[in-house]
Length: 257
Image (cartoon, rainbow, N blue to C red; front, side, top):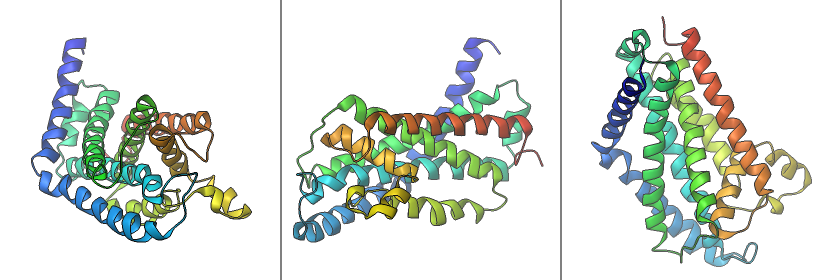
């Protein structure tokens, strides 16, 4: 395909994905804002007011980056896993596979849609957070970089889950039994430095810990993890999942039955 044709093909998928979730924003954007508002009220104001400061920050200030990242993770993942599995279920993904469109553009198209939803929800939750805390950004560049990379990572994870899924039940297994535990144990509501030795070491195997701390560094300037290590881990995961998603499409695993 020529460059102009590739651009047209990619932009078509991206626009379709964006229109897909913006058309039903009451189901895709609004619930996240309501849920995260409850987190701020319950964990931030009610419980947080009874807790000591962490790294010199009020508890509600400390958990804001993690709550924003939770929204980005869940929505990036949900957008791609539901969209790509629906394309498989309705069998119109086959039209993409037999077209001259390269596999990497197909992956980028779906991932871009997930990133768009993740960032839109993340921005919405950030606006909500502004009603509870005085927002400031230690490094806006680092904050945006973490948000985009994390959204890409979980959009790719959603794509891979959708490729393997054989029923709608299969696309809910990973969020329920993998994403939720990892998120809650990823330092969203506490500092990993508060954990005893063995649990501290186990927590370091949780990839979400690196993302939460990288965003916390970008917004607040504090982190339990070396920021270079955190970014290196995130980028490594993004590249690994991207290459694996390309491999699945190339081999037709889960999409050519």
